[in-house]
Amino acid sequence: MESIKPCPIFEFNDNQLINVRKCFGYDDINRLKQDIDQLEDWIKKQPHFRVKEFDRDFLERYLIYNKGSIERAKKRFDKLCTFTGMMPEFLQNYDIRNEFVPHNNVCMTCVLPKPTPDNYRVVVSVLTGVHDNKFELISYYRYLIVFGHYMLQHDYCNGYEIIGDTRNIQMGTVKTMNPIIVHKALNLVIEALGQRMKKIHFLSGSKFFDTLITIIKQGLSQKLSQRLIIHDSVESLYDHIQREHLPKDLGGDEKSVKELTEMDFKEISSDEHIERVKYMEQASTDESLRNSATFNEEYSGMPGSFKTLCVD
Image (cartoon, rainbow, N blue to C red; front, side, top):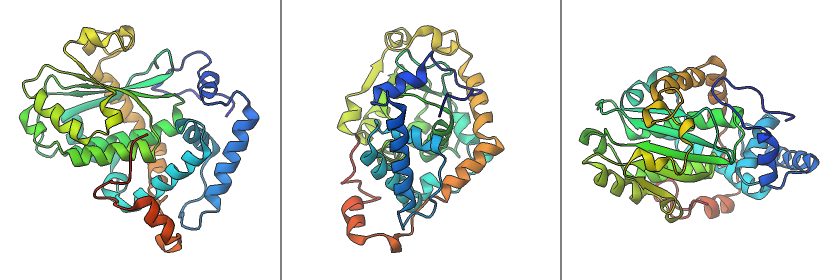
């Protein structure tokens, strides 16, 4: 791509496209084009892929999210297509405009418009203090995956920082937490969608926080556990994220979390994005056409135990 297209919900730093490319060795645009060509050609030659046509801007971002490594991008793209068929509970049958109503009642999730100075994007999830009996933990991760597809079409960043505001969490919501779902979902987001997590921040303050964090840690890899930061106050968050970039709920100058969530939801509910998600739902695999030895080597233990899958 020649430039980042304007996006209704994202802002970009000056020279963000150039600086992100430099981080992954793409100072030379010709090298980037060659790598996109190679990835595109490889996808078209895979007999077990049901969908083989993807736009080049998407493939470029996928390479960026995989640190400019063609081999890593190939392996993770294969996982994305494979998991789409193996784990439809996460990756298929979306009803974007309706299925996330219970989720939005319990947990408002938005992406901050301004990126960090080092070109990371910040995702904020705020528990509202409401418990909806129809809420299920898997819905939260389905929402992140739908948003991940949006990122791969519209954003251009080094990775992500996550902020979880759990100060209003209720015991009813804690009871929905399942470390197995946490582990599966994070592996999908990182290993299949290629999203890179720089840090995960949690704001404590609820009497149920210790129980919550114990459950979450059970679902994190060792590497992600080391990137987990607990904040006893909003003020300590400012040491990591510029205060003026944060929503007003967290003492910043940006719109409220509710306003940002509504803006973001409008975007991912657009006809254009719904069609995009439907297209990606078709991008699964026909395992009868895959080398069985390769499948056994790559996916032994899937999807139940994830024994062979680790977060990079």
